[in-house]
Image (cartoon, rainbow, N blue to C red; front, top):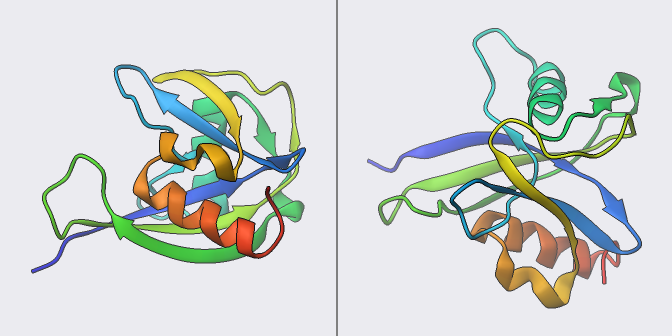
Length: 133
């Protein structure tokens, strides 16, 4: 049986690059977000996870669905898939690493190799849609 890790992800683009985060003791960057807690909507979980990871408050009425992407989950057995349900949103506050996050960065298409396989799928799509360069 295939296992699927269900995650929400926040797509924030600045100057043609995607905001990504890297956890402490990890080498690859991923898209900020995380897993729902019981009873949470996508929007509630995304707002909570982004606040925990990078200290900003997403604007609830600006949250817009972008797409769903699936890829082999990094650091997991073959066949374990991560499903990223992605949203765009505006925010208030200063982008700043928090909790388990060591570093945040803006990555363009040329540096996608620094990202998780799920993030690479999203970056390829954003590039094809002419959202990032």
